Image (spheres, helix red, strand yellow):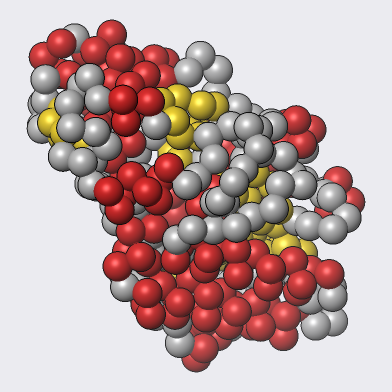
Amino acid sequence: MTVIAITGAAGWLGGILADALVADGRTPDLSFILADIVEPKEVKGHKSVCMKADLTDASEIERIYTTDAGIPDVIYCLHGIMSRGSEDNFDLGLKVNIDSIRLMLQAARRHSEGRTPIKFIFTSSLAVYGGPLPEVVTPSTIATPEGAYGMGKLTSELLVNEFTRRGFVDGRIIRLPTITVRPGVPSAATSAFISGIIREPLKGIEAVCPVGSSIDSPELELAAWLASPEVTIKNFVQVMHVPAEKFLKHTRVVCLPGFTATVREELQALEKVAGPDALKLVTFRDDPTNRRIVSSWPARFDNSYPLSLGFSVDEGGMVPIVERFKKAVDAGLA
């Protein structure tokens, strides 16, 4: 029996990860420990311990490791305060994005004693980058964040790497591209509009684009590094299966594969798939803070290293992604 714990399990990604792990089939005998600030839903057909927990509290974190499901073999650490939320509430961002990760690592360290180190999978972000950057980011590019969210993620990355170096855990750090199109309601992420300007118009709802003041604004050339939800979840499953010796010796960081698209290219894909009436539902209200943060993130990465580890990348740019989401909306599934 392989025991997998997922924090942030009531969130969008956490909510579908367990099902994806089951469907993958490479680890057939699974049980789950699911924790979040609100109680997650159980995984049908599999033993599931679902707990409402404040993961900034060490005693609450300890509950993850002491359920009747047993000590987790794998932990997906997905919980956190998103980018704009971290910027607007700095102290809460420190508490959730750094302090709780340190507590999670210390607990994993204690419970790994005398057994194979727990696989500790930490979801990070391209928000760790900022400042002058090369045209294409590689694994050797230094991370210098320009926002509270990126700072918190980078700090926790260093902790995961150090705990791994010392053999306390088997850390795996995945830096996510901006995921689009995200279903559901808008999140507190600075990049939430990248999904919103597609998702809302496809549902017949007005969307606000915080970059530029009109469809002709030069600011719409702002580029982002993107991945679809389908490929992202596939890569979440893959990271558990990468042999430890395949990672670079000095770091467990992997920037997940993605592709580059500008805000303008997103809107062009929306119009191509859903027509001019959908595009008319996008209005423009320039937000300098939002634009500054997103502009500081890199938009082009070298995919060679993650692809060598078995990770996947989207093909065809924005149009296939918008087409898939439109089909989901039309079927009442998004």
